[in-house]
Length: 185
Image (cartoon, rainbow, N blue to C red; front, side, top):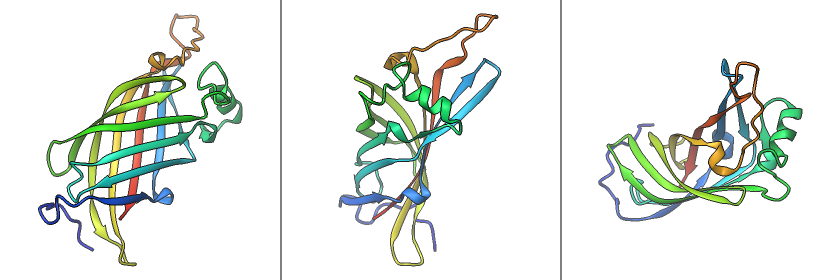
């Protein structure tokens, strides 16, 4: 199985790629008490991707089920679903809609899109690292990506902000986004 890095063949032909959820993960990380980091992920999400072989003309939509949040601590997950943060009962989905993708080189892209959390939509920029395309042992074409970025949680009205004695926040304002995505043509 050779990894494809030359995209010239069939570059203009767009095809549908489907998410392989068993080999994909949508994760987040936030500072806790200034001194450490807490991570978590969402168990349920979907991705719609239509792209040519070089992915520079991709059409991307992501939907994340807020109620599937998993930080490893049930009480923390319930707090994150509450009106202090995501207010999952009223806003059960996080969505991302790609607007433009810019190919930096054969392995890196910049993805521009609109992220909606709660009832707030803001433009964001994400770094996409292309891992390659292969034909798997069952004859299916697969591609892999790592997606990285960060947002200010206050921009999305995730404003719960208890302070500690020294004046720092219990939860940092910057939320890092880390996604590993595998798709199948």
